[in-house]
Picture (cartoon, each protein chain N blue to C red):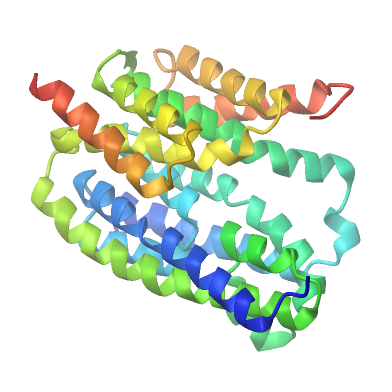
Length: 224
Length: 101
């Protein structure tokens, strides 16, 4: 079956619509966690990588230092580095074009580009997905931020529970093997053990770090 | 500049640098089996830790409350392949309702 340009664009817009709309949850949680509307919108405009943005809020909301939050969030963004590697050969971008396109390197734009067979369709998938998410994500962040300001305390309407659910939603598609599930559980267990002992924010970095080490050392013979 | 803005600026610079480096660095520098493995593990490990702290931590101690109920609802809905946004809304709704009871 040959994939037409049109179907690549339609698929990309579908992913863009589905992903961009959840900017509303980011915006609402952000202002309810104490960031102002400007800070919230700057994050979505200039950081533009959802999981990292949520991670930053999670650490701020739990009383952590913003610098610890930013470093954890950046570490979480390190997967974009590896997305860039597989995108580079498929998109073949030069100079200013590469500089401008780098901002759009996220989970979804990568997924919609690397599965294509031709350079033309890789580019179509990458830009239509990346740009549609960018536009909608920022618009929805702004609307969510205004709503979050009205809500005030995140415990009202269970917004604090929404953050945990958002993280689980981001983690879920990655839990495809027992190896991944055990690494995630180990990270959770170490982090919880450290909560009473260390400053807020650190349990996440240390728990996550310990789980990466476990995952590197323990290699199951059959990788599911 | 408040520390919140400092954190935001670090994130902007750090996250963009990672994205741009990925598109620019010659492939052989990063494409070792060990680095690729670590890159797959980092989000899984960090998200696991983030969920745990988000759901159980309360100012330096651990507490079980409506947040856990919200997480359980999210897990069930995700297992049923419900999309992201309804999952997040449902978790918030259930936790909010549980607190009202």
